[in-house]
Amino acid sequence: MFWFVLRVKRRNEIKIASQLEALGFQIFCPTVTTVKQWSDRKKKVIAPLINSYLFIKIQEKDRAKVFEVPGVLKYLFYLGKPAKVPNKEIELLQEYLVDSSLSAAIDQKKEGDAHIISSGPFKGKEGVIQEVGKNRLQVLLLELGVKVTLTKVA
Image (cartoon, rainbow, N blue to C red):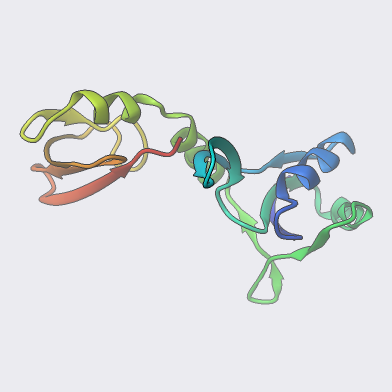
C-alpha cells in the first residue's frame, strides 16, 4: 500500500477525511490550530495545513472507491501516474506537527542561547539562537554553517 494525494473540495478537507475514514481508509489530513480574530472576538480554529489536499493510504485496486464520497475531486498525478508519497515523508510531516517543544523554546529562549533541534532533517543538531520572534526562532547551526528558521505550528 502506498500513500496517494487526493484533491478535494476546498474548505471540506476535514469533513471528507472523516467520511473516508468511516469507509475504512487510512487518511492523513495535516492540520494546524490558529487563532482567528474577528471584530468582536478571537477563536481557535483548526485548519488544514495544505488546502484542498489529503493523503490516503490505499491499495492500487481500491483507488476508485474514494469517489463514492462527495467532494473528492481527483488524484494528484506526476509524470502521468498517480503521485505516490513515501511513508517516510508522511512520518516526517506527522513528527513535525506533533513537536510542541518549539512553543516552549520560543517563550523561554533569548538571543545567544544554545538550542538543540528536536525534529525534522536537522534533528539533534545544536545551534545558537540568532533571533527570537513571536512565532519563530532563527538558529545558526555552527557545524553546518546554516541558518535555520523554526516556526511554531500550533
